[in-house]
Amino acid sequence: MNRTIRHAAVFSLLLVLALLVRTTWLQGYEAQALQDHDRNDRRTIARYAQPLGDIVVAGSPVTGSAATGGADLAYQRTYTDGELYAAVTGYSSQAFGATQLEGIHSEVLDGTDSRLKDPVDALTGKRQAPGDVLTTIDPAVQKAGFEALGDIKGAAVAVDPATGRILGMVSTPSYDPSRIAGQTESSSAAWRQLLADKDKPLVNRALRQPLAPGSTFKLVVAAAALEEGLYASVDEPTDSPLPYMLPGSTKALTNDIAGAPCEDASLRTALQYSCNSVFGKLAVDLGQEKVRAMAEKFGFNEKELDIPVRAYPSVYPTGLDKAQTALTGIGQFDVTATPLQMALVSAVIANGGELESPHMVSEVVDSGGDTLDSYGNGSARRIVSAETAEQLSSAMVTVVEDGTGTNARIPGAEVGGKTGTAQRGANNSEIPYAWFTSFAEDTESGESVAVAVLIEDAGGPRSEVSGNGLAAPVAQKMMAAALK
Image (cartoon, rainbow, N blue to C red; front, side, top):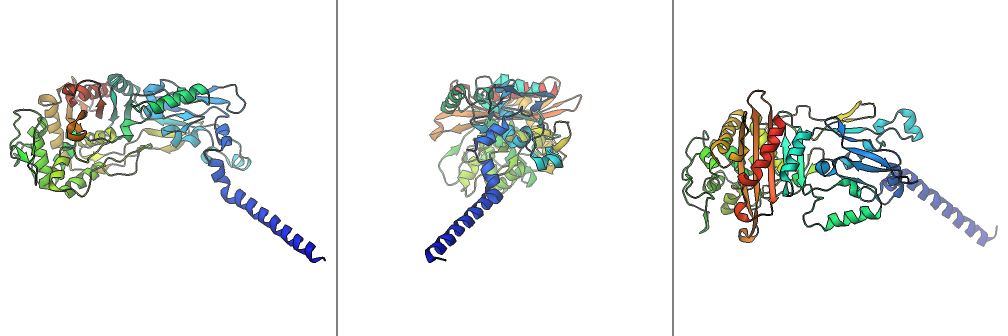
């Protein structure tokens, strides 16, 4: 054979082998990654080729699917009371993807989850009928929180302390996911408008915007003081000078209520009047490590809190000096928390010191109603002793009955709470955040609920910003709705 022909034949054979290797690699190793790639339009076309499964609240779907009349994207996601439930559902958009429950359970909702297929379907690739996601949301609680917040920038979370079921999750201002569900110019315009909105309606403030919790964090410090044996009860006088000078500083930690009996006040009185001087010194007496340890028991610094939507971590910082530690004792400096986290603090206190795993989904089911996943199987963790929880519960009731949380009272229920007003901006130059975390128990049925409310910006003057004035009324309405 001619040498040139032989070389050309060998080279051609090598090219064929290279093509075979590359084809095998694509089909065997990269096929799934390419199929799942965000820019693969076939994935989107397949997802919206048939109606999606539904997200269900109290037995009724709050999502749906509507025929578009198009050849490729045959169906489009629709939402019932979209603004009301946006913080729960997230969105499913042909153009912008899916978030929250829509994203986490996307394979069940679009029928591609392998558990929905029988063995024959697995071989043929036939797409099965989609499943549904059943939530724990109580529509009355959700509506009460949404209407109470109204045009205010804020968030609220309601939890059943005994089960961990999330009964309500609200973030305002909200948005209607239906407006961005399609691939039309109107959907694109609505998307651009949402992104440009300075109030960030797409952000779920209940889960994903941790902010300074202010005086609501004093409950964590009080729990640490009782658990560490620093004080035997909430009625024992503390060693708390007035004023309290920040260690290594010439600055005094002042109290918000003029003339409040904060000098050597008991924990009950200090919570009742929200005495900064008491809890600043208490944090220093405990030391940052013990305060952090208690905060972490309650869930701070947890990086994988999934309900099943992942919440951003609430943070108790490290590397503090004594003055900074004192400021963390009143929920300032670099302490941050989500409304979910502060609702869990009250839930632990209301549940005898135990934390039930928080969850927003009760079951994921197939088209026939058979369970694929279930949540909330009594996986309680002890956070503080039952005695500590009872003492803190009693002190929180005093806050509502005779202290700074009177706007949370509910006839026929025992209500406990803690207000918070968190400074922000250099030298407290910006309007503070208003907080309220609370629980309520029906005196007849024994049913209970824990609620935390954050008012990020109510739009009024700073003189009107207080946890009792702004946040407690929202919590009161949600708790009343939960107890019916």
